Every structure is written in structure tokens, then in C-alpha cells.
Image (tube, rainbow, N blue to C red):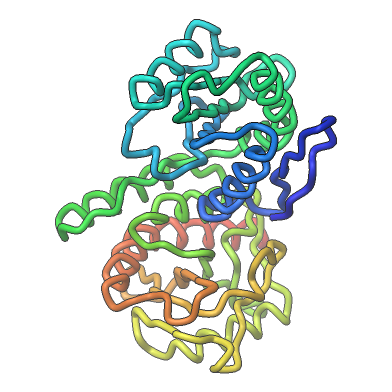
Length: 335
């Protein structure tokens, strides 16, 4: 992920740009903080809310995360958001304690792909000039939001504490991720979405056992379900080093990978891989046979705790048959 300025006169907009895999919720949250800070220099606000309208329908709150508790449902884009619906949304924020509100659509050609709301606790804080400014900000976000809207998304459920609720929540969201995934890349990203609240992490990978000579495959690199999965020799050696460090345990934690002399295996999506420090790993097994690994990574050392292991173990049990099926299809495709 990188930040690039929009060139609209008088408005600096940190535009979300990324190579490879779609940004995670944590990456988007970091970008939203930068966006809010930048917009505040030209349009003072106490809250800047941003929703995405994915092409498959629905809406996704990109920030701020605290707004989830208010359960605000933004108006749908069909394909444009009606002005009357924007007025209703502004009224909802006023009822919630923000006297001054501006809501504008984020438009890409003839489709609204997002929604931007600026709100202030001050009375009569906004005028026509501020409305025009927010429209220019929205225009600067059109390209990035259009790309984001093309990807599938899962809205993660709130973190649960009761063990029964944890099992139900994790199971339901992972099954949803499996249903929506079109390829391996989607599967890895949607699985990361599904677990982002219950098991916070910076990076997630699915590693599958593959036939010799490669031995390993990165499921997240599969753009189509039938594509043969391959890992270059350097990547295979890196995976071997991690697997050796994990040992024979079905679930294992590595508090500081750099202290152990190992690194997160690189792939075509190397965004943040060099900064990944700690790992939580769960073995994928089907019928007592190992078919791969589910890896969670964090940039903070000693990030994962013992309580996270049960969530990782449950996720691995649910996803293992799908990984085994993809590996088998990839093997047939490469035969």
C-alpha cells in the first residue's frame, strides 16, 4: 500500500494505491486515518465516515471503525445514490449529535462506488464552500474506490468472548468467505476479513502441500482455481525454514521470527512481508494427513497469545478440505 496525492487544486487527498492483493481492513484503517487528517486541513470535522459500495452489492464501512456500533446503513447505489437518501443520512447524523453534516457520493463514471460523510459538533459549521471541497475530495477517491469495489468483501463480526459465540461467529464467517471466493487470492483475503476482529493480524497466508519438486504452494497466488500452484526455489526454502521452526505441533507461535533467523516467505505480494515479526500457525489436516498450513503474521513481536490458538485451530479445521481440493485441482491442471 502506498499514499499518493490527488492533484485537485487546493485539496490534498491521500489516494490508496496497492500492488498485488487487495488491502486488508487494517491497512485501509491506516489509510483512512491519513485521509481524515489530510481533509481536516481544508474541511475541519469531528468525524469523517467512508463507505464502499462493492460491485456485488451491500456496503462496507472503511472508517472509522467506532461507527460500527451505531449500525448506520448507508443508502444503496442503484447505480447512483438518490439525493433524498443523502439528506436522510445527514439527518441520521444530526439526530446522533452532529449539528453540521455533509454527505456526498464517491462517483466513478456512471456508478457510485462509495459514500463520504463529514460531520461537525459545531452549529452551522459548513457552507457551500465546504460542500464543494468535500465533492473534490470524493472525486479524488473515485479511482481507488472503483478498484476496491471490484473485489469481494466480508464485513467481520464483532469480537466475541463467550466460547460458544466464538465458534458460531468464526464458523459462519469462514463459510461465507468460502462461498464468495472466486480463486485462491479471494480466499486468503476474505478469510483475513472474516477473522480480522476475532484474531487481529497484519498478514494471512494459506500454504498448501504440493507435489515434488516444489513441495509447497501459496494458495493466495492462485488467480484461478484450476491454475497450477508453484513457488520458486527461494520461496520454497523459506517455507521449509518456517515449517522446521514450527516443529510437529498442530498449532504453534513464533514470538520473534527475526530472532530465530527466519523470515516470512515472500510471494508476488510482498507488501509488508519484511516487517512481519511474529507468527501464529495452524496445521491443515484432512483424514489425518497434512495438506498445508494456515499462517497469521503480525508486525509486532509477541503479538499472538495462547487464547488465539483455539481460533486458529478452528479456522484450520474448517478451511483444510477446501485447500486440499484446490491443491488436487491444481495438480491435475499441471499434469
